Amino acid sequence: MIDALLKIAADATAIILEKYEGELSVEWKGVNDPVTALDKEVNAFVVGAIEKAFPGIPVIAEESDPASWAARRGPVAFFVDPIDGTRDLIERTGDFCVMLGLVEDNRPTKGVIAWPTKRRTFFGEKGKGAFEIARDGSRKPIRVAPTPKDRASTRTVVSRYHADPKTLAFLDSLGMRDRTEVGSAGLKVLRVATGEADAYVHLTGGGKLWDACAPEAILAEAGGVLTDGQGRTLDYRGDLGLAGMIAATTDILAWLRS
Image (cartoon, rainbow, N blue to C red; front, side, top):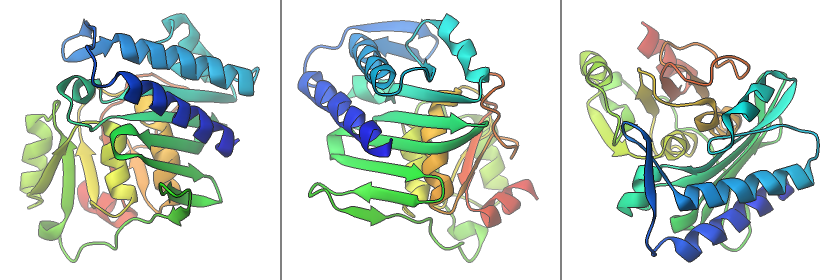
């Protein structure tokens, strides 16, 4: 299954790169929530490709008909974010990605994240590890960084477009002031999974389950933990909206809870 998902993500990447430098037709679904024609095109392609490869498994995708989202309450479902980081797509920062995840019995078991502008692809599979695929096709294991010696030296990533005063004040109160702003939620979690950062902290809502599924599958196999903003396990059969998101090691999560 992973190889099939990797192929779908690669084909989605090709669609994105073909049109990335062209004009992007932008609509607004809500405040700070844009969508482009390219988001919709990639969504349709990925959903169709998954349904063809894995018939009978529901696909919960961000730009699909909301009526299809209720299927997440079953025993197995794919969660798809066709372009995570649409603001970054529009602003041409390069910080956006394609995310495909599978949930079985309410836990993410497989995840693929493709970063088109960097030609980097990551995947994780329960019990088999987490990896980055290099341009030559080789697969390199990824792992979270060792726990920092103290909170002051903890490297944290925060939201570029949705940073909230509550999160920043909370990190300040812990002395965690080494912060980098990143757009895409998936890329923020990947920074933790690859050891490039120690924690991603966002205490308030805004994200959806498709923002978390593939990243959680990869992070878990890399030795980290993904929770909501209160440190609780995510429920993929529950509300689509997330009450924040934290990606870290268990040690750092304990710091944040203390």
